[in-house]
Length: 207
Image (tube, rainbow, N blue to C red):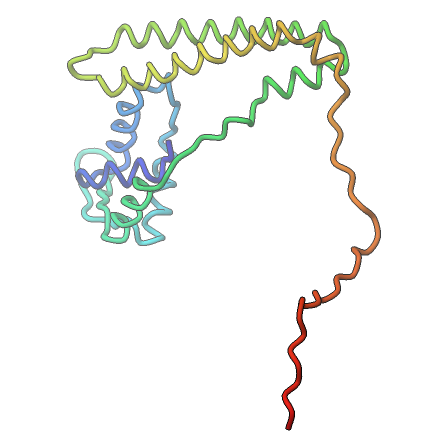
């Protein structure tokens, strides 16, 4: 989740100061254990949004402690938020560090590749147990959104575990195949291109 748009979305609901925004963002994602967002990130993002004219300072709260600067979203901020909400979102699916580690380790030591798979499988199971326990503690009458977020994480982790099993079962087959090579490129200047000759050449008109 983008901090920039999360802040714009929360300010679209009501004006807030940085401390309250940080607390509401943590609640939105189910706690700091799911996304350890630092308060400095919120304040820095607020400053950049203000510089871009997407939020503005609406008031300053003075109490017993330090002053709290309350920010509100501007019309330009609402337009930016609406454009982001309506934009299509596809997470990169082929950028996978586990795959990269296994393929590189396989060319060095097959045993190393298998140890990487075993270690990664154990880590995924630990994360699966953690997320499943969190989901069980969530209150479906108040935290349905967070429960659905956990469901997504659980499905991803289960899919990763199944993929690790597939990879391990075919590791020998992958190892026997040649290492991928970049495509060959021609050297030198590209051949000259000649203008195409039309099928029929129109006759010149007589003067």
